[in-house]
Length: 113
Image (cartoon, rainbow, N blue to C red):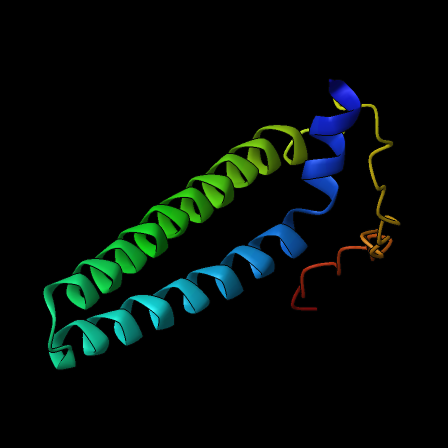
């Protein structure tokens, strides 16, 4: 189970992309079936177009739910790499020269002679 969750977290971007393509395809089907329903002459044709639109809307909701589950898994597992078993990426520290210059001797006050 942990392997499946880690696999989903690793390939989340691809899952989002495929879900987005599926949503666009479903929207095209809904639009085409609506146009077909408006231009149909017989009630049976209207029912078939309506059924096609309903199936596309159900598929659209399933794709959105899949993307939501993938996002939840990605954000819950991807945000803490130590608990998920991955090694954290360490950045090379940048060393800045913060040494202070050596103090110079304080000048003596000017005294009149």
